[in-house]
Image 1 (cartoon, rainbow, N blue to C red):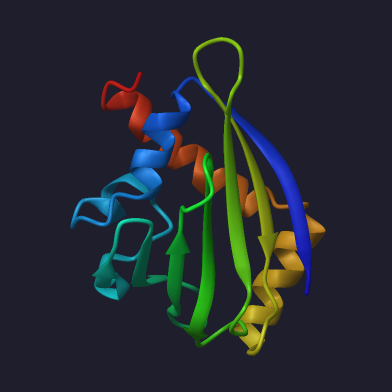
Image 2 (image 1 turned 45 degrees about the vertical axis):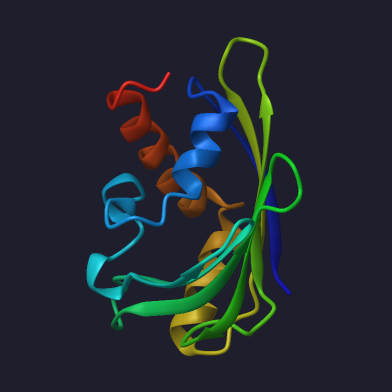
Length: 152
């Protein structure tokens, strides 16, 4: 699978970042700009997992994935594809959250997606070629929104 790893530093503390990653309320698309609200659906939320559908607008039409979120490992959130119109089941993204020494977070992202459609191949090519920049940009936008909401 195509894989990219990168780090993002934020002024938002790790527990607030994790809280936002695990906020499966109707407000989720307001925090994370890559989520297209009509494609967002929550199926089940448990103590350390959630099953949801998220999607984004893309030039060729919306792309979506039914994801299984898991946060049973401390300081780590992993979302794994169960079904998708652009990538294979088992594809995943992991965010490992640690303090950055100045009250904020260092977020280590592992993006590992295997495309199954033309839109998926184009998106994957761009993400890998740009060393994760589109994913990092979307994450930074969400982190800026958290900062604007008063986190920290």
